[in-house]
Image (cartoon, rainbow, N blue to C red; front, side):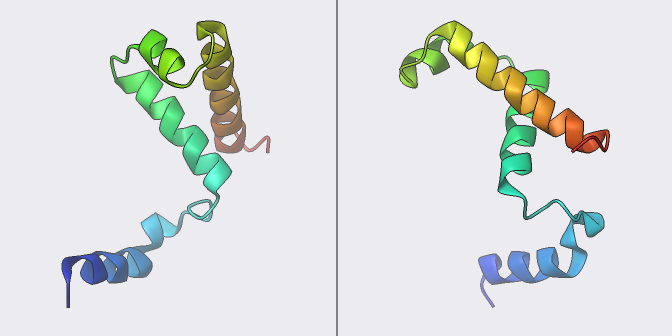
Length: 77
């Protein structure tokens, strides 16, 4: 059995502590952005430039991600 297959098997057995939202891409992408913003030092100006966005547009995107994640986390969505 290859490492990827082993990890997949373990993941399927655990199912991330029964997290029913694991397969929800919208939520998980929002969560990823939220956690990166909360825990990492990121040059968001450079990210905005790479995405061809204005910095304020990226701020809005991060706010929307935070609203999606915290809304589900709080049970609002």
